[in-house]
Length: 312
Image 1 (cartoon, helix red, strand yellow):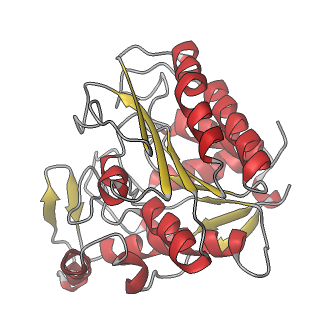
Image 2 (cartoon, helix red, strand yellow; image 1 turned 90 degrees about the horizontal axis):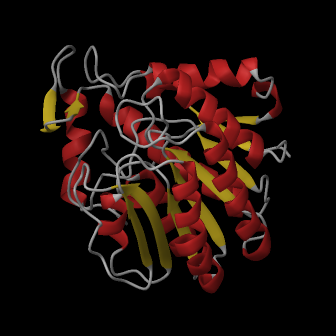
C-alpha cells in the first residue's frame, strides 16, 4: 500500500548541542534503515511545508507561538534554554514550523478532497507531544500531533478523532491541550513514575492513560493495550487515528526502563490498523516522537512502516 512519507531537510538544522539525544542523526538513521529494508523507494515522498500560524494558535497560545518564532533572529552560534532539556537556536523555529507543517500536510493528504493516501508517516523533528498550550518542554516546541488533530476537527469537521501515544514518556502536552475536548480521544501508555511525572491520576472519559512500571516488557504492554485502549477505541469509533509514534520504550534505548522490541511496535500498529479499518476507512497519520538509540529507533520505525504499508 502506498503511503505518504513527509520530511524536510530543515528538520536537520535544529541542533541542541553535542551529545544531546534529540539529534539530527535520528532522521538519517531512519532513512538509512528504510533503504536497507528496500522500502524507501516504495513510499510517496512529500516535503513538509512551513505551518501557517493559524494552525499553531488552535493548540498554542499566540504569545507563546510568537516567542518561539522570535528566536529566528538569534545570532548564529547562540542558543537559549526554554526548559532545562529544551534548547533553541535560530534554526529551531523553521524546523519546528516544518514539523508542524508536516502534520497539516499529512492530514490534508489523507482527508483532502483528492484523498491521495490512506496513511501518512512524518519523519520530522523536533518532536511535539510534551509541548503544552503555553510552553515548550522535553525537547518539544510545537505539538505536532495536536496541530494535526485540531486541523482534522476544525477544517474537516470530524467529530471523533483518536490520538494514540506509545512513547515511553507521558504525552502531557497533548493531554493539556485536549483536556476539555471530548471530540479527541487520547490514549497514552508510559513508564510511571518517570518524566514528566504526570498522567498517573487522570480520570476522564476521553483520556485513557495507562501508566506502567519500570521493567515493563512486551507481554504487559500488549495486555494493557487490549484491556484499556481497544475497548475505548471501539466504543469511541474514531473517524481518524493519529499516532504519537515514540520508540524510546525499546529495550536498547537508555532513555527508559521499558523492554519493548520491534515486534511489539509492529503488533500495536496492526491493532490500530484493525480499528482504523473498522471505523476510519483505514485513515492513519503517524508522527515521529521519541526514540534515541539510533539502531533500535531505525529498526522500530521500519517495522512500524512495514505494517502501515500492509507488508507485514
